[in-house]
Length: 116
Length: 114
Image 1 (cartoon, helix red, strand yellow):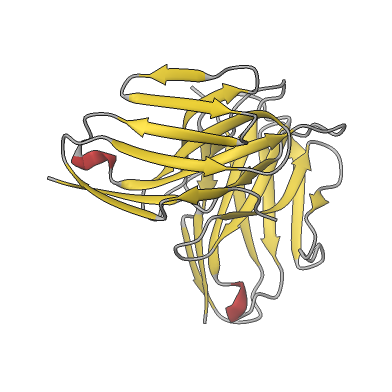
Image 2: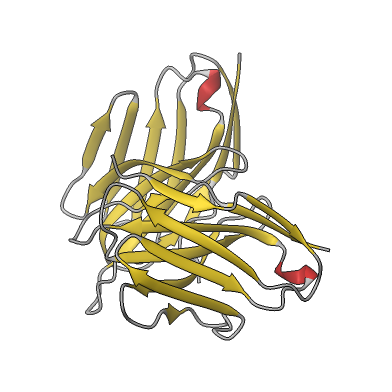
């Protein structure tokens, strides 16, 4: 149980393109979803926390107009990288939590974004 | 910001040996979690230990938590080549707005040689 599907797994596109990444909880309802960014050989950096039906809470230093997050249902959250540039190239990972205290997060397999 | 520190940063052992990784954190926590990440993949949850627990076991994994020292350790016994991965600790900070947000440590890269 507790499967999170993230698509696409890899994106290569030109500078200026907007890229949408989907994160779906397949077998549970995700009250909260999280979006992370990970640079090579580094840890995960939390970008934003997303609750169904409300605006995402962004971490300090993360541009909300650059990284648009939508959490329209209890099973789907999307991250759109708008007008992507080479410095946005990274590994983006989502996770989902079903609510309640002392529960683990369940992670998608990540999206490798490469902007040329 | 990342509040966890892990050591060692990298660990290389022979199959069959035990691997110990340590994690330190800075604030009061609800729980501490350990995750594993294979190269280029997402994270897999290994074990969660609550702030009122001191030790927890799961298969070949043993986790300890010392809240007075704000530290935790992960022990993998009888390691296998398939245990090769990066291991991260993550803390669920205690606070008034308990969103379940996790703060990750820098990770330990474990290599188990066959």
